[in-house]
Image (cartoon, rainbow, N blue to C red):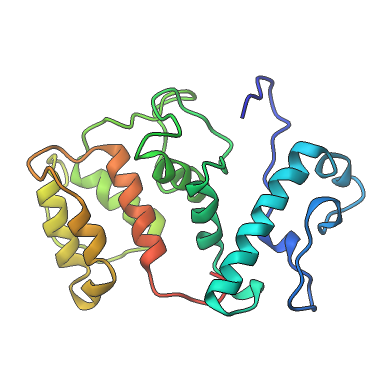
Amino acid sequence: TDWQGEGGLFQIPMGALIPAKLDGLLAAEKNISVSRIVNGSTRLQPVTMLTGQAVGALAALSVQKKTEPRKVRVIDVQAALLKAKSQLSLRKFEDVPDYSTSWPGVEASMLYGYMDADSENIYGVYNEMHWIEVKDAFKRALHTKKFPERDLTAPLTVGEFKTWLRELYKKDIKNYEDIIDYMTDEDKPLTKGRLALTIFNIMKAAPEKDGK
């Protein structure tokens, strides 16, 4: 996370840690699935430590869920790593330190591309949101097509956002009730950071599909 140069940073997909045919085994450190050329970078100690941490999280989730590692959702492994303050995106913002409550959501928004930063170094975590920005983020993150009607140009409060979420998810509200109820300060404007985090929490709470 202290990289100051241009280029050079990369991410490793979870599939590189899982054998193609063998269950009950995970690769970590220098034996992950990469080409000979890529191995020149992935064999270095900072990378092997991080892949080892990721494999540990994946193994623990596999045991907890009583399932094979290949059936564990990527987002669940990412959530575990973010909880441990492991940076997963290639971006770092001055207004979102890793102790910020919004940080996991900001990381997820960069990983999944459902929201954009204000600039290279500023995310805009305290920006007040409008309905058009909420709709766009949900379309990009969750492929939502039908929305409760609102004036897209209007700003919104946390309370209005909660009401909208209950309308949006009224058919399976039990999956998302805790996420909605967790948001307090209903009279305050909905900020960009809170929106990013809420969407990430909704993605985690969505019904599981094997390995997705």
